[in-house]
Length: 165
Image 1 (cartoon, rainbow, N blue to C red):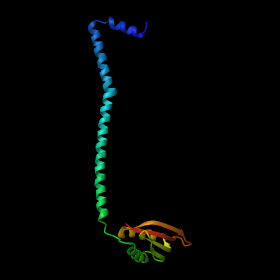
Image 2: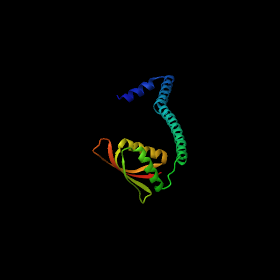
Image 3: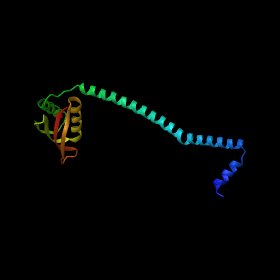
Image 4: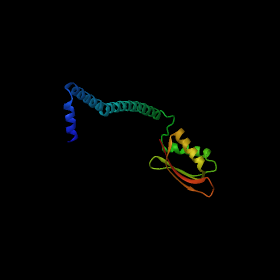
């Protein structure tokens, strides 16, 4: 006799009241299993996703505010170099004072409204500080930088392309 047949026989051997209790217990057990295995995990996952969405929305709003502030700061900078010839003058003056011992070979404007600068025997550290200062105070940025070592430690020969903005 199969297990299923034994269970059916045992179930039908019970009196009607006991059968009703077994059926009720089975339904209750089924409902509890559905709740614990399906419904509760879905509700928990939904709550965590809602919290995640809310935190992402807060971060997004902060990023929008930051982007707006950056746009405002970008438009209100305290410097403006209008053209390459004005840049040439600024570069000549600042290089002479900021780069002691360097040989400024040539400063000339190119067709793209940029300025090309050739400097020999410049201290690499001084040059980096000078370029950082030019960018922060005058709005001059480095477009290209080519350097080669010299025999003196810490000194290089450079060719720079600098542009306003």
